[in-house]
Length: 270
Length: 257
Image 1 (tube, rainbow over the protein chains, first blue to last red):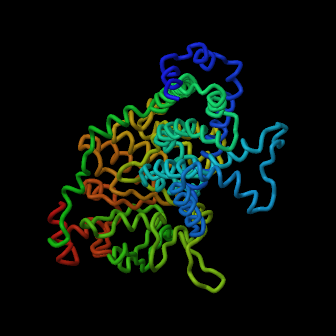
Image 2 (image 1 turned 135 degrees about the vertical axis):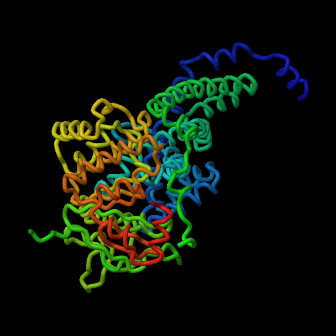
């Protein structure tokens, strides 16, 4: 046994490594799955996050409670538990085969596991996005809502036209980081049999018993994908900062108390 | 002589923040074309009063009417006074314009867009008309070359003038000014006061919280002195200055004049 280990350690199979790294034909499907699942989840989870964040701040108590419970429960649940719960438990709870091996969605034939995986990650990510979006909205000066309402805007109109466009600038950077961890989290879908990058690697490892080659290659793939994403994120952030630079400069250098506050007469002197 | 038309009626309004009373049975009337200045010591409730008039704060008691219409509240079927729906409050607020101490321009919109956003999305004015009206308004406040600038690229005085133009674009029946010059550097105060003085000459109905005594003397028809959430004095500025009714007013005026 030890001889085998030593042999494996000495002999790094460069051929297998190169195949796992450059064998696009073998990897293509897995990479596309990882990327597409990540993007779909990000879009859905952003929508869930907006709805949840607005519910959290809603006038209606019931919505506030629902949003709080959702965020609290999900943030305290390991993502793998959520994934197993959605895939294995919910079909039993509903007594319906929600995620059959083959299903048709929007004219596409996909595996039920992918659908369950997308749902589970959306539920998971949505809770985190909710907090990010809520923090972004609360960071906007309340004077902005006052001004919008004083102009005669209704609350949701003010939110859409005045508050959210400003909050986006605050929200995008952490949302981008969230996407980064989401891409990595899709590897958990391997455990319910989604043919993404990590499962693809694991299957080869199971066949070849060559963890170093296989997992180094897959790690490099994740690093490449996320480095690309990082470039995109930097560009987006630079773009959003445009037009706000003067404001940022002023905010840090020109905080001046109103003269009226300084010169005011204390009530006791009257 | 024509009978004065009431624009603003504040009757017996009470308001507390937690257990701290801010307005204690506040009442005042403002008729069309009147310029009323409010002064008073810090914490006397001046800003809160203006915010209540625009229903940016709820009130605990009393009633505020603009053009004879209650703002923020209605009677339900049982005759109980309840807060009005978001839609109705927004509708009622159109009659009121608010100029804030800290301008509160929308930083993601240009000066011109700050002025058109209300007419476009609240009044439903078409794009071309909103734009051309905004251009006229920018010229009026002396900023015709700044339409494409973002608020962050404007000085405080310029921002406040844009904020005034933004309010004018909504053609409000009543304009509220909450210490409009007290966040400004001294050299910018006059350019804002000048615009306000012109508005006063046009017979606009204005309620101005300000300690700019030059403006009070030159433009105000009436001076209201507030203290502890109530009206201490209410009369023509000359009269209040010359003959304050109470010792408290006299001492306050001695400090601000």
